[in-house]
Image (cartoon, rainbow, N blue to C red; front, side, top):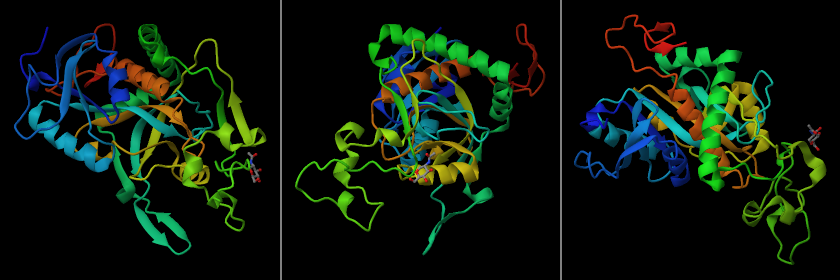
Length: 356
Ligand SMILES: *[C@@H]1O[C@H](CO)[C@@H](O)[C@H](O)[C@H]1NC(C)=O
């Protein structure tokens, strides 16, 4: 049944790109309202909302006018003026991924990363010899609040995680049947050597570009960044991992630290350094601002490897896997029990709001 007012919505899903919001909306079991015609919003709130139901939860889907932390923070403050009963924020969409997790599980394109900790990697000091990230409490934007932390810990256990993955695949399959754009691209998933740059290797034109300047091996011209690996002549021998298109897509879920910055990570070597130092599995540019005070986690499909070879080919598929994982995640989320006591949950054992 359609909730009476805005205040009956407890879950918000934040997306930065229309593509991400589309993927989430494809998972609505029911749409109550589009763009505030029925539920409206507080004066001064310029956000766009789509209200609906996913499974047993009423959710409000909100998309941000642009990406970046400032944007997420201001969107969220308007949102909380219009929706006063919010208990959970999911930042859903796509992000860049590290090639593997700290415990050596490989991460492939289309896999999903869920954050239990968020760090800010551009927070630190620039020294003449390089940038030093401030570690310790200051650089940590947030650990998800206790309820989410307990749920994520539960989901990290092998069997629960594979149950989550199976649910996710079921939902993925459903939206792929309805829309072909969500299907897995039929191209190889390639990972280049981290130190191998995406730049002009073929003698393409007579125009000199900084790629070919000898003595500056780290230069990549802007034009090169807009072209694909084939056109530039990126060397296939520098590919260190390649997965061919699979008959049945395999999608894994990884739970861990996501790093956030206002700059987009496009360097394999920096990626690996941060990943090694901080155990980072994903890189993104929005979300961080959303973290303060509200229980929040990011659920993101990996669309590239945070290096200069990134292309957009995997974005739609990754948006679909991220959104499918969010729907599966919501099956495990129980609204907080306001009395803070044990409650009974059908068939399962429950402590506060977590169902195992
Ligand atoms: C990547 O390239 C560097 C420099 O050419 C080389 O030293 C290194 O062994 C390569 N790494 C892998 C994993 O192949």
